[in-house]
Length: 254
Image (cartoon, rainbow, N blue to C red; front, side, top):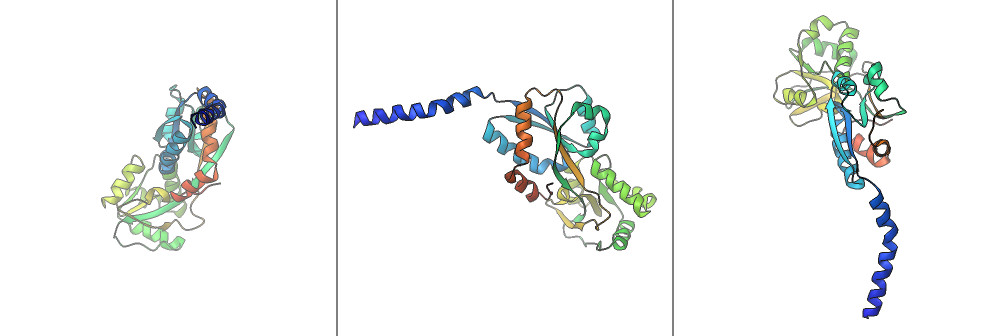
């Protein structure tokens, strides 16, 4: 019996040897990631899954579009970015993320009110325009890619003068959610996934034809310390499992 047990243990050890060798050869990396604040919810969950599966660690810095451009061009090292397409329109930032790039997620604008408040009619362009004109205050994030779409929307509707004067500017998604949950603004107008939060009731998406989706693009940085690990994370974000998480957080996938 003892002899049979010894033989079994030896066989198991020999069978595992190649796997142990492979695992030992893989160096766990700490990846510095730049990401748009609007994609934080799925990114935080997917980062944990990736870390658990690979042993790599992710340090994610979130920001608005201007913040992300500054981060990318400041000289501080980073390994990859998952940011709004608008970041890539800055030549200096684009040079730091030379490509190839891949679309990771997209999301449109939505309207929200403080939980329990009356919901305005936004079922048509005319009704939506009237809701904006009638609102005493509108919370958004002007400095972000989504906020820039909001300001362009005001111009397109011909109400920029009236609405810009009552914009309650938030610094980022967390601040916007806090403002709306506290009832400090009558309407919230921003990326619909960000507005899906406790203390806030989503009225619905901006009427079709008025909203332009914000697209989040991923790419490996020019100075990545571990390009293979960075690419592995981007590949992971494109898996069916990752896409389910992205969709569950109120976003769409390519």
